[in-house]
Length: 290
Length: 132
Image (cartoon, rainbow over all chains, first blue to last red; front, side):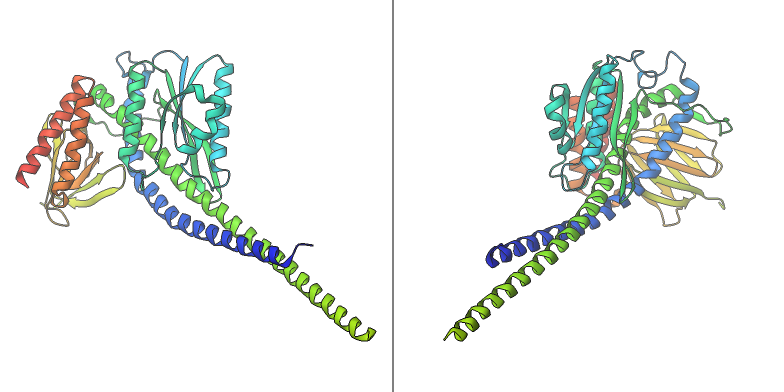
């Protein structure tokens, strides 16, 4: 049986852990709120941009003069995967889920004979992918030290991606991130960035616009911006998901710690009682023997 | 003037402004234009410049934009700008920070279009700083 002292130490250590997880949970909860607000606030821009691009792209898609970001390079050989994960752990299976999806995608593409390169955003993803796929990395980005992810961060990534596209390093770019659904459910998702996917035009009853300058020039101007906007959107969803997952994970950890403390306290009291009883018996039987 | 045009100024991070205004002057790629209610549907890219709101619900205002695009439908004007800020809230430090970024962009620009765009922004920012 464990000694009383060691039990006391264990109870103290689990209590300390519970304090930390509790604090982490509360921090995550407040950051989560902020992240969610940011996601909601960013939505109108992304939606409007998407709508205008769809509107323009529908008519220009088969035009040989269409921008390369829309048409693609005409090949489907080299793929770039932009894997976005969090920079910190302690958020349950959040990062692992994204990485798992990334691995799946990598294997799928490789077995189809495609060339794959990886653009890693976030520290955890890099750590988890490094061992198996480290040789595929072309670029990594981290946000350690960045307090709030702003559009400028996304722009930096977008710019780098576009540079690589211009240099002909890849034909298709796909971003992998976690779509935020609720605090307990985040779905790892893939989304094609380049060439920009165009949905089948729905009954085009929209307004007829005048364009200034002309349509293809506007499109050429908008598409590169859109890459950054899409990345920004993915990053925001990721942040919201990360803190959501962290809240759930830390809530679970706090509860588990509470259970362990209860169990240990019970064991501690029982042991103490047994010891007292034993000592009493020793005294009484000693007295009786006289 | 009775009819007002609804003016939305949106940045990637948030909806900066949404109000009715009598006229909004935007820096279109091919020249400034004043947009009033009933303007014909139009989509235009913007150059770096200032947006002037006159007769707005919350008074007149001037906003700095670093480019973007505008969509006009009869009763509504939506400006999507990557960076927009109310000129009265833009202080010297803000201008300098933007200037530094723009200069970096210029040094890294890889084609004439990017270079011209960055230069335009720098000129505008210098101008703003001189006035402040």
